[in-house]
Length: 321
Image (cartoon, rainbow, N blue to C red; front, side):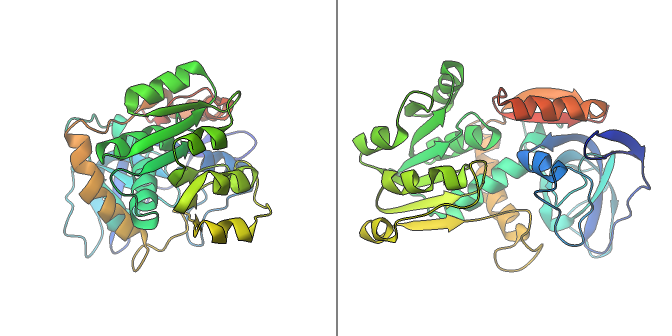
């Protein structure tokens, strides 16, 4: 099979076709999602977990072509998408069956590649970690990103008020169209002051990490929950414990890639929650996958450049055709 390898320069290489181990399926890949985690891995800052392949790619869509021992819920020919620990930038990938999701009705197979990583990240963090409730106020940093565009829609569908930060009028307008109630241009507005005017955020979904830590805590209302899922703004920062205690607030950090396949807090649990909560909303048209640009697999470098530019609204995909 063809696969993308390399770091400084991404190149097409021929690798052996994967064989399914017990509990796995092999997917003939139609499309793969491009994520900032891929950019970090190229820089040596986000290595794959032990036992995972070092080929880039954390999500794919395609058709099941082989099934390992012990797999009964999937059949050869099923159209699916899947959450991966790695290996998505290839024509075939082996993946634990519990990390596979059916292609949602009404979504084409290429576009389905835009769903697993964002849907699982958003559902697990907003529902399982932050326990977001109807009527609360959610602040999403990077509202026009793949994570952001999905979080806006899921929260809106659950009757949650949504505030977003983004850096251009076009991005903020797209966030409004998707259901955002409060639009904050972070190049000119102070998000802390804007959120305080609305009473403070119950939940903040943050991709920035250190750069926003103290300001995020300031923007929380009493009992608020800050969920950090990225470190684009750095990994270390000081925090006033007094401010946290006064607000009886919580700061929570999570990752998805390093979770175990099975067991408490596993990828299997995350995928099950996502399928139960998010898939009906997608099939009803209330949550729509947002794809900015699609590149052929051979143009993976260009896809990375586009994502890294910050210009994308929604997901960037690679296709194998």
